[in-house]
Image (cartoon, rainbow, N blue to C red):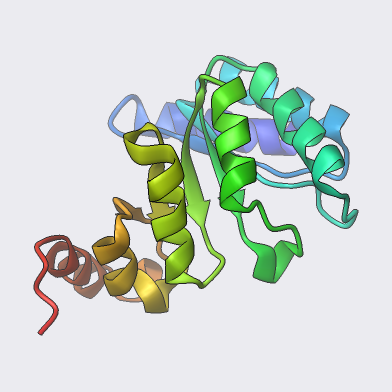
Length: 176
């Protein structure tokens, strides 16, 4: 925990306000995730990306309690990370809508279900209340057309210029 917080402080110091630092809040327990969220805020982070607890696979009631505790622990703007492929926890659109109704600081989702229809369903339920960012590189063009507004790209690490160009073209509706 202390090492994670020190990394966040180092990032905040190094960027010195030139870019936001968004801390990934991932932990084995809710108590650990809440402590990390609070410490990230104290370290100067601008926002949080909230993940489900790792290792333990709970039902909706348990996962909601975990996410809600993290969201309540901070005033920072938060993004929910939905990656059912990797985490085996799937926040379906109706659950996301429920969280949005209860937590004013939940503003975005990193949607990594690999199903472009999920982007459309989230947009239909949440409208402009939720900023949808895609985390699956091979569906960015379709996701932008479906209503996503951003891309948290792994591909950008390997080919940053081409990734930016692809995102810009998709955002302009240029698919050929």
